[in-house]
Amino acid sequence: MKTIWIVSGGAEAIPGIIRAKELGLHVVVSDGNESAPGFEYADDSVVASTYDIDATVQAAYDYSHNNRKIDGVISIASDVPVTVAAVAHELGLPGISVETARLACDKLAMKQRFAENSIPIPWFSEIESLKQLQDIIDKRGYPLIIKPVDSRGARGVLRLLEQHDLAWAYNYSKSYSPMGRVMVEEYLSGIQVSTEALIVNGQGFTSGFSDRNYEYLDRFSPYIIENGGHQPSVLAENDQLELADTAVKAGLAMGIQNGVAKGDMVMTADGPKVIEIAARLSGGWFCTDQIPLGTGVDLVGSAIKLALGEDLDTSLLKPQWRKGVAIRYFFPPTGKIKSIENTELFTQCPWVYKIGFFVKPGDEILTVTDHTKRAGYVITTGDTRDEAIDRAQEVISAVRIVTI
Ligand SMILES: Nc1ncnc2c1ncn2[C@@H]1O[C@H](COP(=O)(O)OP(=O)(O)O)[C@@H](O)[C@H]1O
Ligand SMILES: [Mg+2]
Image 1 (spheres, rainbow, N blue to C red):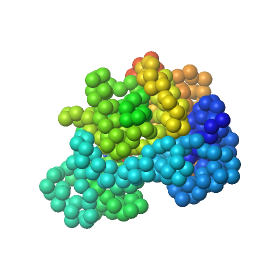
Image 2 (image 1 turned 30 degrees about the vertical axis):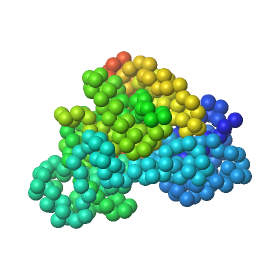
Image 3 (image 1 turned 180 degrees about the horizontal axis):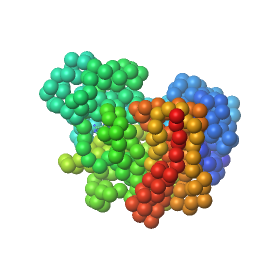
Image 4 (image 1 turned 135 degrees about the horizontal axis):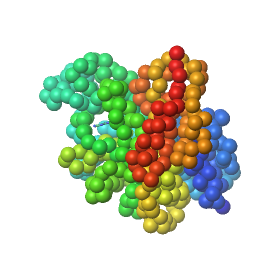
């Protein structure tokens, strides 16, 4: 029996942990949270923070010497590619290099790599002072994106318009960067898409393709808050192929020869452009649930096999169908939560696939500034994209998170 080490035992990793068990693997899960919900589904659990590279490498090394040989390492729904790559490197397991994983966590180095490889990207520049930001705005005008070089979950990402205070924006964005570094980018208009591909021996197979919903760009301005996504995409087949191909080329340029390339992409008037590529499986129930629902592809199962260095039947990565799937989020008014009402209306509903809350009565709802401030979500299915979206919206309007 082979052993897979899964870095991340959060709720969103659970379907992947279960999938690994179904594949007949011995499953070890590591997480910094002693009561990580994923531990319950694992054969062995190890307490080591997913962000603590040294602690996870040490724990995996000790485990492989004292318990069982480890055959592969992966993360599920957790943005820790360097931790995973470092374990793979230490134990001689398949996977991407630490250098590639580091590129995925440094938006500036990643964009430089893309530029060197003629991957289509927005204009960008590092910003080292407020004066430099002002000069760029004088030259290029608005809107402009400012973001931390090394954060995630849209933390510190702002869409700057004329009315915003630049000094505030610069310091705000910088405050979210562990390295204290920020960058600006041209704002790309167009349909935003999430792609998720496995690259197998240098060849890309894109199973995940979902349009992202940015209806609240004005409501939450200058913060950029995604209100879910939906499949199948509204884009024409040719545009989808071109966009997926660009994301895979970007992944290859980063050095991903065997692994996941998850793209934040925009279909602009000048064709597809890359915002960023993550070298890991997605969160938000995308890889574990939304992709299988929408396409019939067991992406996580294949990613696990790839992490074990097994031969993959890549025909299984081709979508078998295109069904309607939508995810939308709850954005209740700020204040203290009194109650969450009307969820019982949907408990028997066959098209509500999953509904969940990140908050409970007594918690405080804060101003929405990034994706960690969303209050909950619903995932719905339908025969078509529009049916799934309408159903998600019905749930979002009917379920009330009452705040005082
Ligand atoms: N240059 C850009 N043009 C348009 N939208 C952008 C741009 N950069 C970022 N965004 C929006 O902000 C979101 C978060 O930015 P991103 O660079 O992906 O950081 P994070 O690591 O926090 O996901 C993106 O998913 C996208 O919707
Ligand atoms: Mg992103």
